[in-house]
Every structure is written in structure tokens, then in C-alpha cells.
Length: 122
Image 1 (spheres, one colour):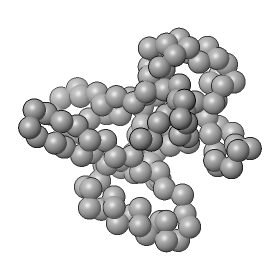
Image 2 (cartoon, rainbow, N blue to C red; image 1 turned 180 degrees about the horizontal axis):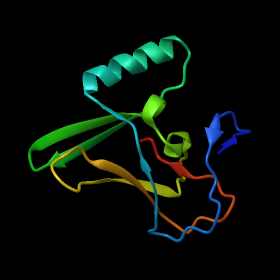
Image 3 (cartoon, helix red, strand yellow; image 1 turned 135 degrees about the vertical axis):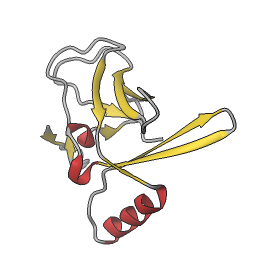
Image 4 (spheres, rainbow, N blue to C red; image 1 turned 90 degrees about the horizontal axis):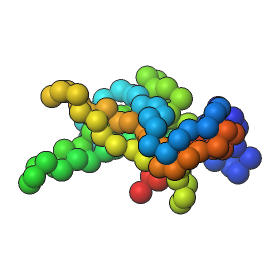
């Protein structure tokens, strides 16, 4: 974890070569309903605070499900991974049972040691 000089706040760098397709980390946080996540985000932004909310939408045939994770208090280092228009990580929902999905980050290309880890927020 490092303080970005590009004004993005904290960031995360690779400590070793990460090959394309390798599992890198899981985005961990408190599971929230969409309504609670929306309220928290509005409250935190109004107070000028950083938010660590991740919303993942899944489609199962005709059914759509949203999973919200707030890493502010119950998170791990993944909350410091920043956005990039040319990300080196891809996020995937991984289900290991009927419980909420886990949000896994995988290398979308080889990542060099010292390179900042990034995802696309869009």
C-alpha cells in the first residue's frame, strides 16, 4: 500500500510478478442492501469522506441481483485498488454456495513487480 502521487489517495502495488489469469485478492467488506449502501454513500460524500463501496450486479436468466460490499470498517487491502482506464485486474463474482457471492480479482495481463494494481469501476 502506498500514497499515490497522482491524487488518487492510497494505492496497491504488486510485490512480485503476477501472471495473467492468477488470482490476486478478494474484495472483502460488510454485506449491505442496496438501499443502505446508497444512504451510506450519500452521507459519506456529503461529509467529504472516502467511500469503499462496491456494488456488483449479477444476472441469472431473467433475474437480477445486486450485492453491495462496504470495505470501510471490515475490508482488506483490496479497498485501496484504484480505477484505471487500462486496468490490470478483472473482478469476477465467485459463488461457492447459496450465500452472497465473493468478489475475486484476477490479473487480466502479466503484472510487473512494483506496478500499481487497478480495476475498472465502470
